Image 1 (cartoon, one colour):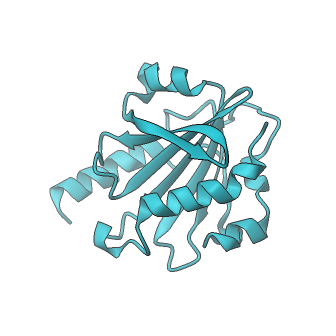
Image 2: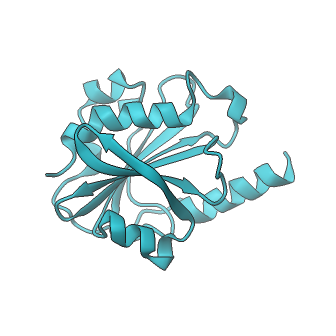
Length: 172
């Protein structure tokens, strides 16, 4: 494993962790996306894993799913209390940088990159404004995979496709 990939794996583990947090109660469970919707975008509904991971997101609620096709990708849906603007300026989230506006199913959204992967070959993030905070939709290439092993148009295209599909289930 290259030093850069090893650093990426270690950093991902630090950011993502493995334990569950208490999460902020948004009144909505991120794991409540219907199985048919998840299957339609290539996620395995049975792989749902609730709970927030990592220090950065300890006050959020979250759910993660693996891709149905060889688990090449993991998708996380986080709900948190900061607005998109607050998220972009909060030092806790200094690893993320806004790279441009997006529209997800007519919702105001922002695409982000992470310092570990500025070219977005392994990680893609979309923040979506919610009435009481934001949703953070995050797709990640499996650590065991090289960026060239991404399916279809890659991780960012998958994140966009999933975001469009699940956005109708987000609060507000």
